[in-house]
Structure formats: structure tokens, C-alpha cells
Length: 114
Image (tube, rainbow, N blue to C red; front, side, top):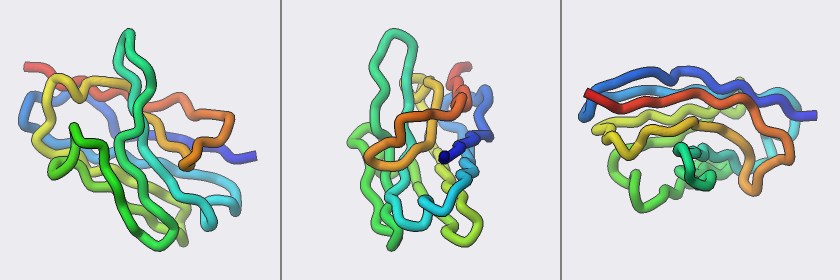
């Protein structure tokens, strides 16, 4: 069973930066694309960024040029560097595989507000 633990969220002013981290257990990490998702209040969960095992990345249109996803296959970790944050980036952020495993971590709250 895969376990996912997200961290690094917090309160930041518009234009600020945050770095999210995800620790994943299980050998399956090394053969799966990994992704960050987010869910804002009253909205459906959306895919933010994806990275393949080989390091190829893809981003949602709303975060292109501002967010960077990376992974360390040896440590089973995925990170999301978020720059130039906007209030509309406020959400709970989750990591999971792409496509996602059935179970999700508890996520980490990101709030962008002045």
C-alpha cells in the first residue's frame, strides 16, 4: 500500500513563494508518473503538474511559468516549487501518482492572501 505525506504549505502574500514536498512509501514510486493536485473550496480537485519517471514535466495552464515540479527517485520524494503565487492558488495541495492511486494523503494547505 502506498502512503503519501505532503508538507510545506502555509500562508504567503501574493507574489511570494512556497516549496511543497511529498514523501511516498512503496517501491511503486519508481515506476509511476507523479503529480501534484489541488482542491480549492467548493471546486473539484484539479491536476497542477505531472512528472514522469524520466523527468518529463507538464503543467496546468494556470501555473505554467510559475510552478516547477521535480522528483528524487532515490528518496521517493516529489517537490513543487511555487513562485509568483496568486490568491487563486489558494487550495489544499496533494501529491499522488498520475493516474492517481485510490488513497490520498491529507494534503497541505496553501493560502495566498495579503
